[in-house]
Image 1 (tube, rainbow, N blue to C red):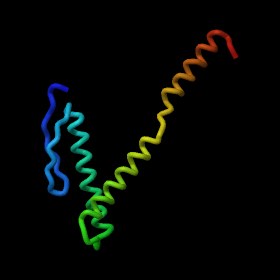
Image 2 (image 1 turned 90 degrees about the horizontal axis):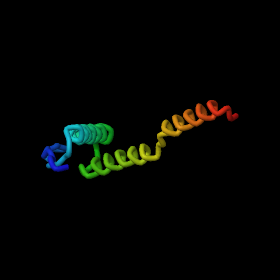
Image 3 (image 1 turned 60 degrees about the vertical axis):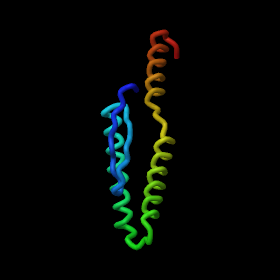
Image 4 (image 1 turned 90 degrees about the vertical axis):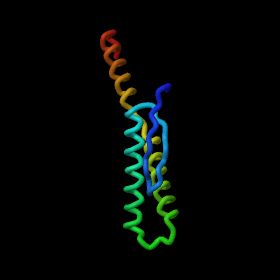
Length: 97
């Protein structure tokens, strides 16, 4: 990661300086900042009477973290399915049933 890119993303009017390793990573951070800003706005629309902005921020963090936990719990079974398919082919070629 010798050539890092310096970027700024803005959430809630706060500019955050970041270093990223590639244009792809830059896009991830920019998209993430946009998603957070939209989530905060949706929470403001849904709960307009909260007395402190911190509630919106914490609720947005909680929702985002819950989604991350759910996503990490999902298991990608495709490699195992492919491995089983390959093993079945090999067994068939050896006439093993």
